[in-house]
Image (cartoon, rainbow over all chains, first blue to last red; front, side, top):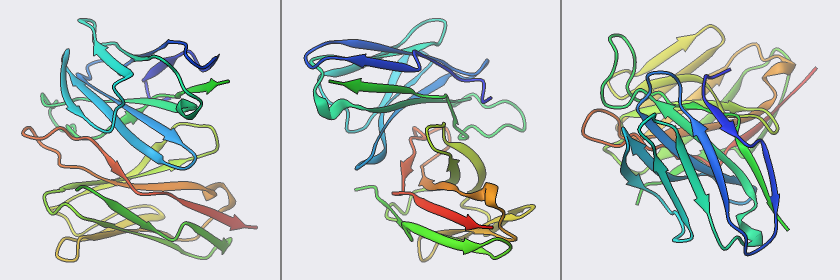
Length: 119
Length: 115
């Protein structure tokens, strides 16, 4: 168990719908990263938040958005869903920029993922 | 742009043999290189990582080597066991306080260890 939690585990929805994926980072971690894993694209970085602020964006579609709340949990919102959005969505957390003594600031720990199926 | 190439895509070895997976990165500013193991339907699990100021790191049966000049790094697993069977991903990032730390992943290597 990495200490990162994600809900729901599975999500089945129809094209055109909107869903929200939730992630709670490890206690003390300030950075949250979202990754998409599909069969043909591998693990792709989507977006990063650090202490409530967006820090980096990858190839995230305009239909997707995210935020990190004051309690540091993060949500990834996917709208106008298409069949091609079916994938595993992982979040990962790291200590971030304010590293604890002896702790790497870069190590990312992954949550169990949310499997999204768009029918 | 940032890119990580990983080879081979599949690797089959006999139990007890060694396995080597190689990755090449494009961004010379990358300074952190983790390796993740992912079992089917599970989360990627960090197994070892290395920073650019170190050439080699070992943890029991697993070792990673880094060649900054050639921009490549490799994972070595010795005395492989059936439970080592999984998909292995290499990644690269620009860590530290001035960068984001986002991971750029290789395409993955499916390792099969035959009993």
